[in-house]
Structures are given as structure tokens and as C-alpha cells.
Image (cartoon, rainbow, N blue to C red; front, side):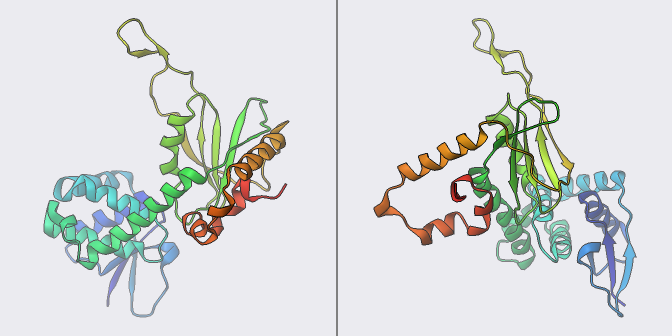
Amino acid sequence: MPQLYLYDDSFDGLLTALFAAYCAAEKPDGIAAESEFEDGLFVEKIKVTSDRARAADAINVIANFISIDALHNIFYAFLAESDDHGSIIYDYFNFGIEKGRLVDNFLHDPRVIGVHKLRDKLHCEKHRLLGLIRFKQVEAADNLPLYYAECEPDNNVIGLLAPHFAHRLPGERWMIHDLKRGIAVINEARPKARRGGGNGKTAGAAAEKTWSVVDITRDKAPEPAEKEEIYQDLWRAFIKNIAIETRINPKLQRRCMPARYWKYLTEMQKN
């Protein structure tokens, strides 16, 4: 009877299952997340409990016996939404153990193609959202400025957006809320770096990580701050006035900026 390792939907759970399969004398036929598993009469399911120590061991196996790039590919494939990413990652992992650091050179092998497709799908959405996130200032409980953006991405991508906005808006407090998954990335403001003496180096604030991903659910969006509606109206007016009527191309617009993102774009909302 085929054996299937089941893990919880966390990345640690996936890595634990990969390490358990790597160490097992009798290799499982596949692994799957609990949320994507469909029960069957002719499958023996084995629950793998998430374990951070074993997850760390899996990272060492992948990094040392395959490559750091392969570890990144597995992480990105995990973040990409797919009904069978557990089995896709497992096949890639086994192929990587067999081929070592050359695994990603086998571009025509379906085991490599599967993971690369998930990785590329994730990166494509990340690239799109870097230009489509729209912040608005909202009322916060502590009355300090907070810039808030909503989105419903196809993939679990907001953690990949955070470093860009943390770099671009280091002195601001902001939140990007993934409504689909009930998570948010929150950045705490840090002081702007100041120039040092004559050596040209910056002093003051260190470049430490200031953001984190947290679970969050809200019944409704925060109330906009005073005058926020005015700024949104100005933004819509600006977009309208810079448009060149003779060069408007709705088909190209929908390809570069799919309609599923329009719900949270200020310029696509009516006054």
C-alpha cells in the first residue's frame, strides 16, 4: 500500500517531512499538506509532527547535498499556491539528492520544471504587487501615523514585499494586510540614518530588520485618517491628467495589471 507523509501547512512541517523521508529506510511514495490531502482507501497516511530541530536538519541536508539555490526554490514553491506543492517539492528534493548541485541544470526534467514554475509564479506576483500596493493613512489606537494597504494575492507573497518597502519607507510605520490569508506584515518606524563625519559613512540608525509577519483578522478596514480622502482624490486626478487618451490600451492594461487587483487600487475606485 502506498505511504504518504502528511505535514501541517507550515514550512517547518514541510521540512520535517522531507527530513523524515530522507532518513527513512522505506521511502514514502509522497508527502502532502493536510489541507491538500484527499483521503483514500488505498493510501497509508503517516502524520509527521512539525519539529524545528528536524526542520533545521533538513535545511542543512538541502544546503550541503544540493545547494542554497535549491533551498530558496523549495521555499518559494512552498509560498506559491498549488494543490499539490508538497508532492512537487518532494520529487524535486529526491532528484536533488540524486544529482546534487547540478539539479537546476536539468531544465527539461519535469521534477525541476514543477518547482521552477511555482517559483516563477510567485516572483511574477511579487513584481506586480511592488507596483500595485497602495497605502493610505488610517486612524490608529495610539494616534500615531499608520499607513495601511490591503491586498488579496494569489500566493503567500507579502513577506517578500516587506524588505522593499522597509527600505523605501524606513521612517514610517506601515502595514500590508493579506485579507485572503488573515496575515499582515507590519513595519515599525525607525529613525532615518544621518551622515557621519568626513568619512562618508552613515551613522545613527542601524539597518536591523524592523518588520514582522503576524496573524491578523479584521471585521472591517481601519477608518481613514483626516484629509486622507483629499489625498486619494488628488491621486486619482493626477492619474487621469497624465493619461494620454490616444495611447490607452485596455487589453495591455489588463495583462500588466489584472482586474483581480483593481479592488484595492485607489485610481480604479470611483470618487
